[in-house]
Structures are given as C-alpha cells and as structure tokens.
Length: 126
Image 1 (spheres, rainbow, N blue to C red):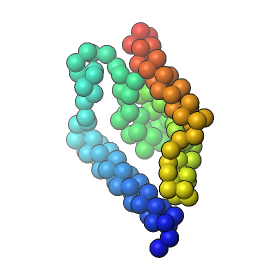
Image 2 (cartoon, rainbow, N blue to C red):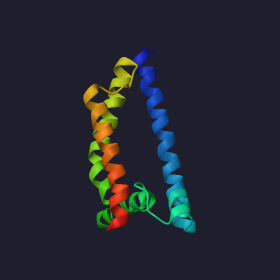
Image 3 (cartoon, rainbow, N blue to C red):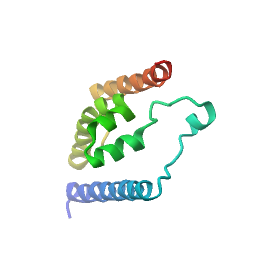
Image 4 (tube, rainbow, N blue to C red):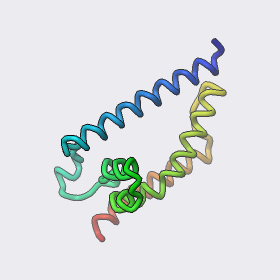
C-alpha cells in the first residue's frame, strides 16, 4: 500500500470514529436530554464562545438552520470556512504527509480565534 493511500485510510478511519462519537452523543442527548455542561458557564454563569455547540449540531442534524443560528450564530458563519480549511489540511496530509497550515491558513486560524474570543465577550453583553 502506498503512503498516500495509507494516510487516506488513517484519515478516513479517524473521521469515521469522530463521526460515530458525534452521532452517539447526539443520540444520547436526544434520548436522555443530558448534555455535557460547559465548565466556564457552570463557574461564571457567562457563555463561552463555544456555548451552544451541542444545540447547534443537534439543530443541524434536524435540518433546523434557524435553531442552529440561535444556538451560536458566529460558529454558523464560520462553519463553511472551517470546512474548507479542514478539507485543505486533509488533502495536504494525504498528498504530502503533513497537515501543517500555510502562512495564510495560519493567519486565518488566528483571525478566527480572535473573532471567537471577541464573540465570547460580546455575547455576554447583548
């Protein structure tokens, strides 16, 4: 088996495990109503930049885009960007064996991180 094929199998295996874990968690939350608590919210009473991710994902699984938007609008806006970034890094990993981001991708990651940090502040003020 060639190296790119081996890396593709590894990547697909990791993706399948992540997908299975996500679907199992969605089924668990749907059946029990019990979800992981945000430690930041539990301690401070404030919403972190990621608060609402579970509701966002569950809403998207149901096809409820407006519910996903209400859960975390910034992450909804970032999803296409994050998807493109993930595909680019994955393709690079399969072809070259390294998923290291380029300078532009690294800058994009820092911009998205800064936006999330700012969102963490703004969402508690509005």
